Length: 278
Image: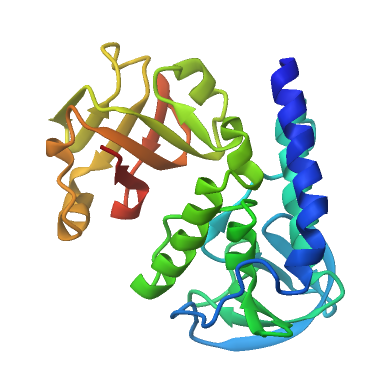
């Protein structure tokens, strides 16, 4: 842990506490509509405990996991001070928005996930109308958009908030260490195994073998960062105008969960996981 990262993590926390009153009273990125961020059923409840930056518990005991976003999570035993500080900041931001308040929930998906959590878009009342909690977190730079299936309008609505926070270097974006890794630093990327991150770099080669498309970001394909795409998923990407084999030589940003496949890797199953940046 170097001094610069400790200073930046302190700045992140300072930002959360400075912006908290503005978030709570509707003065940061007030949404005018949910833009299709709805679900197949609705419920509501009072929030009695915030677990982390993306989940909380209602008074009746139900646990809610916010749909469509990822945040830095607090993991017991994590000794990375910067990551812990970011997790604390994310939880503090969500507490500011929902702790002790009544929230309306629009369920995403057919039912609870395998952990029994409700996956939902959450709304709180503000002086300017209902506010989507996920968008508030994104606008404050305390979350990133997850590449899960979403209505096109909802995804654009959330990505706009993420993009604005990134341009303003708010929250996590003030310290890119938290969010974006360079594909050139394979060890740094692999250190995030099991976590959701963004990786940026140039695709060196694209090849197919054994029903899998490999986007290699270095000459040592067994050690460097790699993106894998199952051939059966290629049509999903192609339907969105993304042709994996044509990405060689392009700079891209990939978002997903880091796996160890000899070297660090992200499996891409949806076009929203890859963004061409040149």
